[in-house]
Length: 96
Image (tube, rainbow, N blue to C red; front, side, top):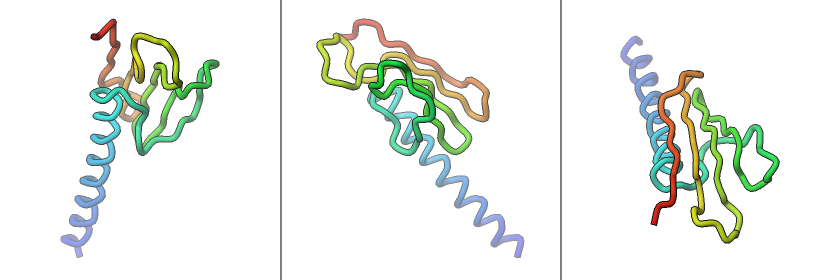
């Protein structure tokens, strides 16, 4: 019985880590909006910037997602939190 509970907990933990990792890479490496998160509060721009909530983690994103003549497209500034504790932040500045 305990082995089954451990197995279920381990499977759930592995799935959570995979989902978090995919969102993290999407935002911080690929500079796109997260895949498995819900936009909770958006900024006045209405272009997808704002606070995104996942299962136990939050990303605060500022970026240019609409078609505009901006130098930087996608996520420009982002902060990541796990259980309300900051873990990582990023800001892009004039990348080629």
